[in-house]
Length: 334
Image (cartoon, rainbow, N blue to C red; front, side, top):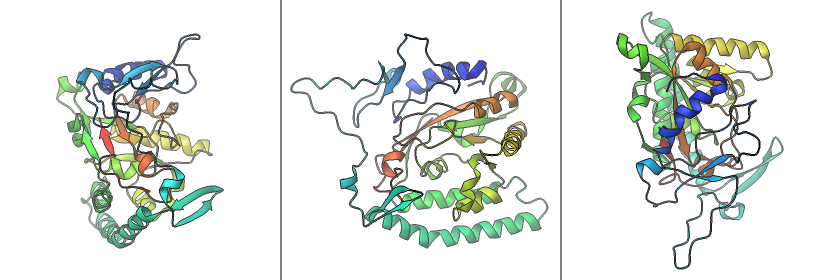
């Protein structure tokens, strides 16, 4: 999908047929670009609804549309009731521990304790692998110049962690684009050259990062907020892998990060961004920020949208760690 059009409207229009063909998203990967209205005054905004679990979906009807935020019609008499969402209520979490972090309630239940055990057992191996590969990259001149081997240690850990906790996602769609991280379109196809792409995904949980590492095989760089540096393992991966770290309170830092991301794209390294700019508290898509689309247009690269389903239910904002297993819930569609 070619990045073009003012304010990202060309991008969103081009994304529509692709996303409708999916049928596995938790929310449509479409929203208004920041700073502009998606509809004219008096025209209702389209919202996407998602087929229920087990509900048949045709390739041309992966998502249905309705006007505004109204509720779906009740099932007809004799029809089976529509299954509820995967989101658990507070009384269903059965927390062993609850506390406040930065003024916000956090809970840890039995599922979270199992995740904590897996993290404590496996993270030391991940950290050791990162240090060994980083040392080799510094010691050997021609080894791991783009930090792809260093980053692969994190991908292996994410996949192992999700498999051990029964949270490995289902993957559907045109996965080949994710495996290659390159696009052959337009002039690039004519010249036989492959260009990097800008990956963009919806963002509703801290678990999104691990889930994306299950599908993005080639070397790529995250655009992430610099506060993640303090997280064990994750911070070391972002810094050592030379990912794009963004300080939102510093204009100079933002400009530096913007230029760094464009440099990666122009040099053939894909970049992964969350265009919403923050985690959605309820899984619904929020307005896009303009930065990731501007980067794609400046670098003249294609945009590949990725839809992540149900991470907000498996690890909601109230959960210190995941609160339920992700099997048959977590999905990635491209």
